[in-house]
Structure formats: C-alpha cells, structure tokens
Image (tube, rainbow, N blue to C red):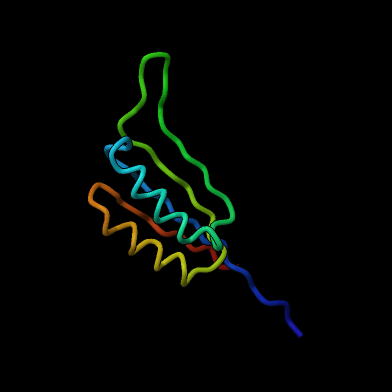
Length: 88
C-alpha cells in the first residue's frame, strides 16, 4: 500500500496598521490554534521604532481549515493573505 502523500500548507498574512489590527488577528488565530503547527511573525523594530505593518507565516496542518482561516482573516480590513499548498 502506498503511503499517504502529505501537503505542506503555508498561509502568509500581511497586516497593515499592526497596532490596531493585531488584537483582531490574534483572536482569529486563537480560534484556529488546533491546526496551526508553526507561527512566525516578522516586522521591523528598532530602539525607537516599530513598523506599522508586519507579516505572519503560518504552517497549517489541514488545507481545508487553512482556507477557512484565510477567508476569516480576509474579512478584517487591512489584512491580506496568500495561501500556498505544496503537494508531494
């Protein structure tokens, strides 16, 4: 019997106006915490500076739930998402 082929599902989230939108994004991510394997947040920061926008990279366990998460995040103004599915 052939082994089941797994996919790698990555959801990239661009957040504009990070300080105002972070709470809404975090609340949404908490609802999907059972399928988020890895979460990486990227934004510029300095001694007296914190970038107004940022990017989250999410490694999602299940493609169908990633699509639901993407649609949910896309409803938040100032959020843009891109879903990438690597099938092998």
